[in-house]
Length: 182
Image (cartoon, rainbow, N blue to C red; front, side, top):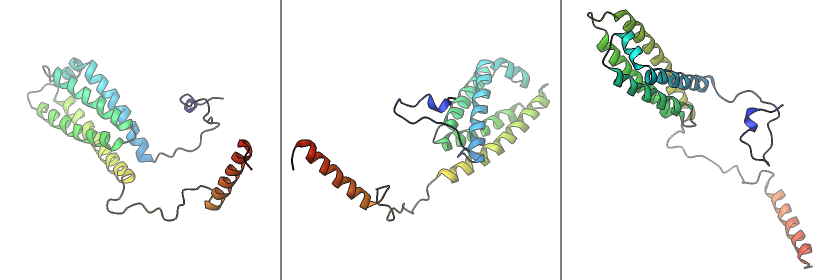
């Protein structure tokens, strides 16, 4: 049985025999889910802006919706990378833009005002999830400023310094016999 994680391994690397529990916290998984959601929403906005604007009664703003789609995709991709904090915080900022844009369409003369209200409620709910995810992921993955890492209990030798000295003596002895020196 092969695992996907074995695909990118070089020939000499060990293979993954079985997968264990995920090291991702719930907030990391939420951030990843929000990243994929962002990519999906961005694709809809990028590929079908006319349908989005028609649904919200915002005809004529197709280019704005396309730009928001590109922003969503880039935020989603950033949210999936190792340094996901930037992507998650850019999602929060984008939610603010989305809400501000929807508020301008929430006018009494807009026949699709109910759709705008529903979209605004959804954006506010997603904003809450984005904010929670961004705050918790940032606090979990950030180093404390002002307190340097302490390494005095580490030698740099996984099996201890005495074992390393013994290995060095053995290596030196083997090179003498190989080179013919006594």
